[in-house]
Image 1 (tube, rainbow, N blue to C red):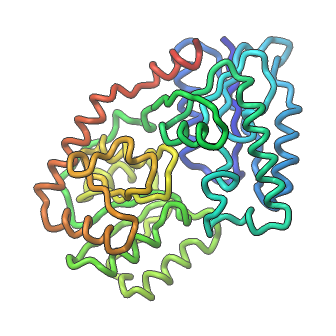
Image 2: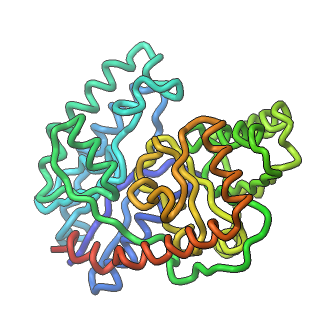
Amino acid sequence: MRVLIATVKVPFVWGGAEVHAAGLRDALSAAGHEAEVVAVPFKWYPPERILDLMLACRLLDVTASCGAAVDRVIGLKFPAYFVRHPNKVHWVLHQHRPAYDLWDSPLNEMRDSPGGARVRNAIREADRRLLPEARAIYTNAANVSKRLKKYNGLDSTPLYHPPQHADKFYRAPAEDFFFFPSRLEGLKRQALVLRALAHTRQPVRVRFAGAGLRPDSLRELEAEAGRLGVRRRVEWLGQVSEEDKRREYARCLGVIFPPLDEDYGYVTLEAMLSSKAVVTCADSGGPLEFVVDGRTGLVAEPTAEGLAAALDRLWGDRGLARSLGEAGRAHYEALGISWQRVVERLAA
């Protein structure tokens, strides 16, 4: 089949969604299909521009290319999944969260915009009316399926996929640091980790990897670390290569990943592939589909004190950190996550 993968992309930003789309393209190609990613530039501010983008995606003609028919469209992200096609399936990474679960969050700029409520209502109505056009709706995590059901009344099937280069992760002897790889932004909650460090009793150290969406993201976090008196216990690695990232995973004592209601989150699975314990939070969403408290990692309350207690526990008990990491790797293997299974569903 000739398959188009419909998604959106913020120019100059590369993250999990882009890795996801590229991985799907490569898996489809390996299975004998002709696959291509079509990414529409995404700009979410001011909120009224989102309505223009929704219309633009709806007007795109992706039924054929160069005179040959497109056999299947796979929609990944809002609003690219609105494109018209008679043979379309969705594999929803996430909806436009500011119109849904993040509406009342202080991180939501849409709510405070004069036309924010109108845009929110339009997004919800479009999702409710247009997503069912697809012959099947899959999501990348049970947490995303839960949101679709809660807000739009739509049923969907979670379909997990492996991280990029899953076969290249490895474990090395643990050193004296936790690793937190993620884009620097409020939803990932690096600031919560800094506040937790101020409450730890052990000399916990954390290495952060990732760049920010905004130019001043790192500067604000560095200032917060200074204000809390933990600057000497953190290291900012910036954007690292995949090879360097795997090396950090391999050498760390454990992995911290406490986002707010994450959709899926490669970090959890990458940590498990590296046989490292994961410390996450009770409201972190996607990671909780894999992290079982006290068995494959630790689930802390989303407070500085709660997260500090979990970090102290692993820092002071290296045997526990090792056993949780080994159990996490075994759990990942037992899940049977594979691109083959994904392709079999999406190309059926």
